Image (cartoon, rainbow, N blue to C red; front, top):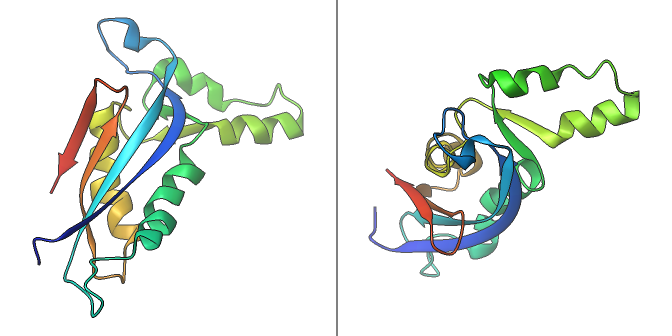
Amino acid sequence: MSGTKAMRYHDISCGHRVVGHENKCRHLHGHNYRIHFECVGELDSLGRVIDFSVIKEKLCMWVENNWDHKFLAWENDSLIKGLKETAFLEPAEQLIFSESIVFVPFNPTAENMCQYLVQVIGPQQLLGTGVTLQKVVIEETAKCHASFKV
C-alpha cells in the first residue's frame, strides 16, 4: 500500500449519552461533530488514492444518512431501552420516533464511534474500491477530539 492518503471531513449534529460517565456526559446531550476520514490505497492511473467525491458518497453520506440529526443510544443502555416501546404513539409519530433514535452496539463515545467507523462501516462502504479507511478522527468540539487508526 502506498504512503499516499486521501482525506475528507464531514460535519453532522447528533445526540448521545455516555453510559457510566462520572460527570455531565451521562446526561442526554449532543454535539456538532466534525468527522475526518483518512483513506489509503495504491494510486490509480490519474495519481489518486480515491476521488474525493467517492469518499463523500461512500463515507460522508453514510454518516449523514445514519447519524446526522439522530440520537445515538447504546443498545444496552437501560435508561434508553424503554424508548423502543412506541405503542403509545400514533403510527406517523412511531415512524418519526423510531427513525430518530439509532441503537448502536457500543457505548457512543467519540472513541467508540471512530473505531466502529473504521472497523465496520469503512470496509462495507469501500468494498470493491481497493481503498481502506485507515483512520477516523472525530472532533466533539474545537478543543476535543478522538481517533482510531488501523
